[in-house]
Picture 1 (tube, rainbow, N blue to C red):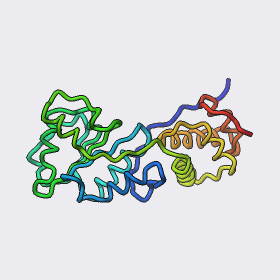
Picture 2: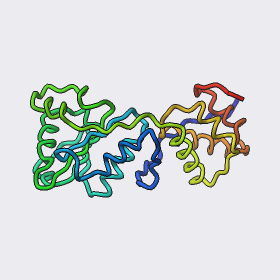
Picture 3: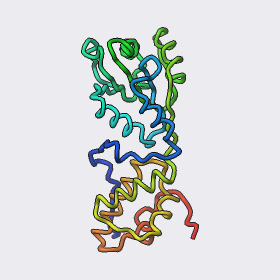
Picture 4: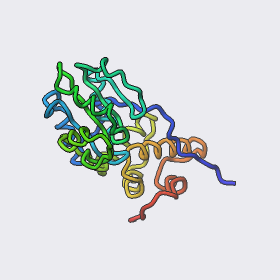
Length: 221
């Protein structure tokens, strides 16, 4: 029977700013984020599809400014947030009265708020009328899906961290097949690392073709 490999998505993520690759797909959002704390009314939404790097960029910002991180499902101690920098992850999933109060704290006693979501705040569903007006007026920074420059840099770093030296032609092969997602690129590097070790094979396009056969794309060779 052929060796079975599973896509490893359980490694703990790291959010170091120096590991974030700036490219045309995200440069505007990076510049907007770096404008902190001079955001309009102390508020900014960081918006983009899954896997685009918005959580990486947002968490790096939170680490740099010692922000309080609020997940979508967290209970919130509102008084403790007054005057603080606050990051609300997946804010599009909790457009509730608590989010309304968090946004109202922005600009008060030095407080600032960064929200992340997959769509622009204008599209977020909410039953809180006053929050609707806040979301409609919220400034948003858009990150597009990762381009090839970002994905190649992610792959090169992932292989280097595993002390691997793939054949040069592996990169264009992977870039033609992998989804436009940094997380998927890292998972593919883990999968190829496991396969090369177990099968005692060179890390090259031939191995990738065998173990990543389910990925979409065409061989342009």
